[in-house]
Length: 605
Ligand SMILES: [Zn+2]
Ligand SMILES: [Zn+2]
Image (cartoon, rainbow, N blue to C red; front, side, top):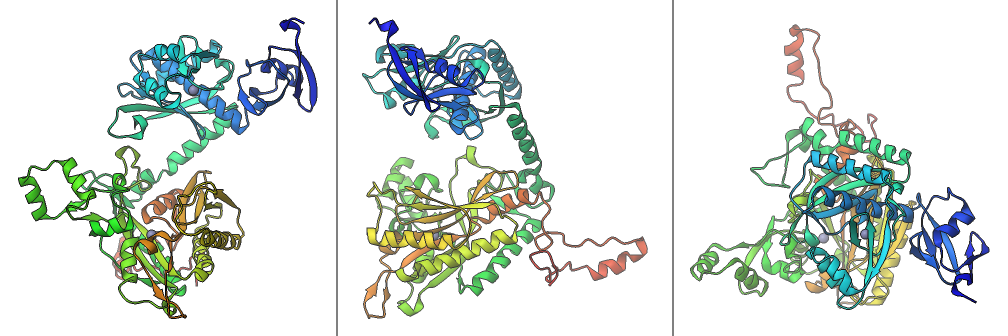
């Protein structure tokens, strides 16, 4: 029997069909589902393949539809290639680097000179032209040598090859017209399948996310499978732009960011401070009810403190550089010590200094350790609206939601193992009250658990099982949807995250509750048990708002700037009928006291 007449059995849509070998997956799908199947790719024996993939053996085929998550992912990935094709045509010097699909769309990073709005329009126009030309998107297999040759003028692609495929192995590339990209695929069959897209914006990015490497131009776009979906998304983005807290916050004079003060550092104006104070007071009432004690700690701490906690040098890149003592600095300068020498000396512990605190935990731990503790003191709940500083990349700073200095509604609970569940319940109750009061009913909860195949976790498996169960039980008591996510726990303990959907359907990670076995160990904390022996407490970190800055930013957008009365900076405004009554009105509201009686659910007490 000649090869051409070999028949294969293809299981598709619940039935077995016979086809000659070398029939394409797309042809099978067309035959079984008809022309309008909406397939963008195929699942052949559970592997994603192009529709042009030729079948040589018996197999199972399922279609990947354009409106499924997988289908959209493929379309968005194809759209990224389309973008790169247009960019390299218009800017022949531009070097494409990576271009992945993301939620709602795609982006591609190019090594090129910055572009403007006008360029963006030009690129989009050319993309539409390429779509109309219906150019086939074809997979090619090449050996390593050929691939290296093909991409020899693009150092970024060469670097990707070094990392991903090594020296000897070949790989695939995808070609559409004159554009070819190193890629695993799969992709849609031709450019005409990509009609519902739009370029949205550009930003700066770094090769490999590393600020010491090349600066790149990132171009973002969105892409959907239908006109309706794209329009819905555009409407949503327009609405989001109107509600943008950066715009509203300015119009309503809630906060100010000043170049002279520094990027990512929020200045709370008098009106914004009213909102913040009301929120703090609101939560403080519940803290008191739940038996928390409030404390204050300084904004800096000795480097040694953070060496013990492990925040230094491990998280150095996300912190402001340390503050070195004046005489040390003078000595180092006399010795002509360079910046990198200084960093090394610090990591090695040869010189001491101070750090802006990136976390409140170490300070709170030292309050715990300031006196001998017995089981009668536990649970000890220490709360602080504590300001911390982190070094966000300048490209990532945005309004109040990504900042370099922020105040957490932080607390640390020092508990016995048996108290974990009860205390988690209290933490969760707090989050529930906050979300309920502010009308943020649409949220989900994620429980981050251990990855069962990893051994990076501190604490015995026994302890972990108990803590994970405590997280599950406490969360279940909330009565909201929650998901368990293995592998998402921190190495030091399981956690519960609250993800809020705002009115526009966007997700924000706000509050978090985290169990910690590591810091009590690192700081050698203890308490005397009822048995008279020393035991180690467990810590719970929790911040229901997360950060005051971020939370307020989200609230401004959530309420579209129209805060409920109890939060509103202007609660009552008195207008006089005529000039005559002005003095009387002024006399009676010269001290615009807050209407302290407003109940937080909007009614009067
Ligand atoms: Zn690709
Ligand atoms: Zn903490």
